[in-house]
Length: 263
Image 1 (cartoon, rainbow, N blue to C red):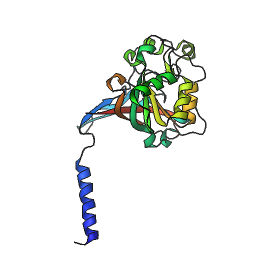
Image 2: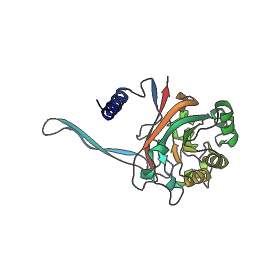
Image 3: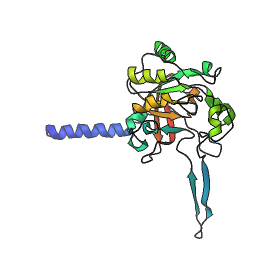
Image 4: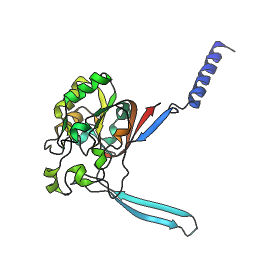
């Protein structure tokens, strides 16, 4: 066997071995998404989720068949905020690279503070305290903010601060979010690719300018809102991926988000 043929054979064996190994064999997946149904929480001014039957039952030929249709606003339930949502000319849902939707996860737990104060802002101090315990956020990391508000889903009043709908509801919204100063710190001092939290918005309910959105969007950072089960993943050591609906030109859309926790 020639040296060239031997090299090709070795490379082929390497590919076969790689195919035979499951990189997620030792560990567990946690679903960080809520199912979409009539109880799904949307922004008070958004169109809620609707699911209708087109056909369900036995066809004339005897086999079972079902098909449904749904409609909703982009921003509700577990969903993506694409940068264009708050930054003109920035990336739409379909333009976000997959590499910007996955990475090692830092779970910053502020639930003790946030559950005492529905208008709590996650601060730079909260982020640096996390780093003092777990080390600096690595380049390409994902930051998830755990406020504890996931325990209230799908109770609209407890989760949003009001059960009102429409424009009149907006002044009554009360839930935690990210301090714009902390958003600025993350994009200027660290190199994260995505951020998410267990509330309806990365800006707190009482925000009127949505400055955290603006800062993150201007730097093409994907935002995931209404995350579920953040209490089930460790503060460090997990890996997450978000797979939002690939809507051409979309400002966001429903997302399936999962975290991998190695053994």
